Amino acid sequence: MRLPRGIRRARQVVVRDTMVAFGGLSAVLQVAGPFVPHLGSGAVVGLSVAACLGWGLFRARPVNRVQQVFRRPDVTVVVEAGDVFDQAAHVVVGFCDTFDTLSADGRVINGDSVQAQLLDRVYGGDLARLDGELTAALASVEPVASEERAAKPLGKLDRYPIGTVAVLGTRPRLVFGVAYSRISNDYVAASGVEDLWQGLGALWDALRTHAQLDTVAMPLVGSGLARLGFLDRDSLLRLVLVSFVARSRESAICRELRLVLRPEELEGVDLRELAAFLEALASDPDR
Image (cartoon, rainbow, N blue to C red; front, side, top):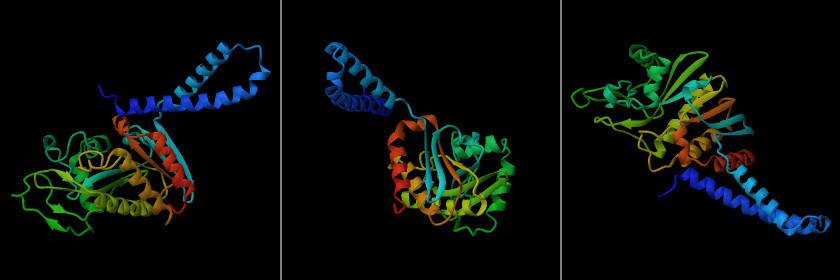
């Protein structure tokens, strides 16, 4: 039976760090050994193995949160497990190009999606209010196409450009709905790296204009039903982070960005390696 990636990775970390620690401790004992003659060789080996194994287990302990402070720009990036709607922050929600909100037994918007949670958690299931705010937010945006009702029996008909951002709600918590995927007339959403990159760029611009440097929380966009499956979650995270850091260096977007992953999404992410990646980004202002 193949072990889950997280367990396999933790085992690898235990073995690697135990061996590294054992090598380092062995070198120390070779130097210090003559000064502690009262310890027998068996005791020394036993203590060494226990200490190194303990160090390996400590290093392999589960990590559910990573934080990196950047000085240029002056911003903190947090990646953690949790619920994006539990955060005391502005919230980012991904949409398709029609800004559909109707669940209709999951045929248009999946009931487990962040969009469906937005309707339930923020709008109390009041679909008319959410749609009204979306209509007002999109009033100044020209649709790029409009479907016939016969071709798309459910949901909305107007299609907006990829990268369109609808700013919803009122302070102290705004919702930034960004279109980064296209939904077909058979209700299948699809996106690509170029679409996501374009959507992220427009999102950062909207946050710069409306968020007033407040904390922003966002889920891992592209990891669900938008069919960006050719990128794993780790790659998606890095793509989002590189986009954010690059645009932040042009001008400030927010003081803190929290990427909030569902606990099950952590399975595909090595947070220790991600922490090293963020540290490299912070230390290399040209990257």
